[in-house]
Length: 332
Image (cartoon, rainbow, N blue to C red; front, side, top):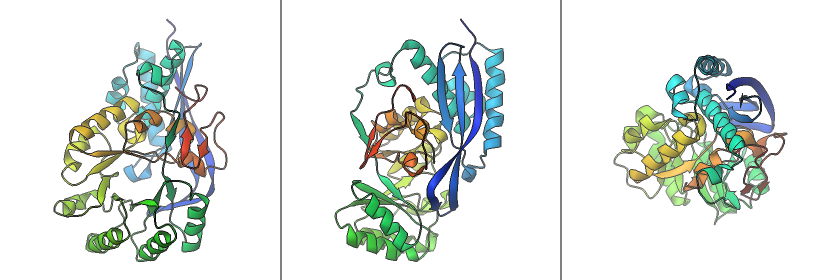
């Protein structure tokens, strides 16, 4: 058997418009593309480092170099956990595990759905994100994506959020809406946000405050679902956040890959938590493995490639909230 080799490269993809959340604006996304091959079959993966977690292209490439050294000196099997154990859950292990799994599927001539013995869906439904901007621009984006059944509206933690939410709800009275604060709500303002969101029929608030304030959610009685994102990075966080949240956002780049993400999903459901499949800003290669997790999830947010000027070849198709299942030429 030929020895497996891993390679990786830093890539940039411009966005159609700047994408803004409470922590800042991006005009370009930066990803790492990983390839694993035996010289005959090739598998690919992708990750998007997140500076919120002190990750960078450089830091994740350093971890991939560790994986490369490990693979050079060891006979690597298909067990995803060996790579997570090597450099921890996070983007590097996620991309390497995705590439390793894709390689295995190509060699076996099976789809990921066949390999896991689950039914392949005809399509997957995703929400669409309306990022922070002026009211006028946010309304234009809402109009552009009005056929999507659910809006995820990004919050800034500032008073201007209330006017924007009111206006969007006024124009779309029956739309399913959730909001994502990305930790921007100050503890003293949480009650105001809850009051407004309850009045407007907002279904969920994702990561309202920074993790150190999670305990303030303990005794809140509300119909609104609280979803942990930044507070729940990997499997080790689930037992903690279950005390404060009703749901968790699972991302492959946080978990360390598809298998670890699926394990998180099983654990979350054991605790009675709802599950959202999310993604970092990425290309279709980044969300392709997450489509499997999406099939087990209560909420799906896999819209990142929608905002790119140009996606990868064999990209996933977006049609009014329905996304096509990834082609084998892309992944899986």
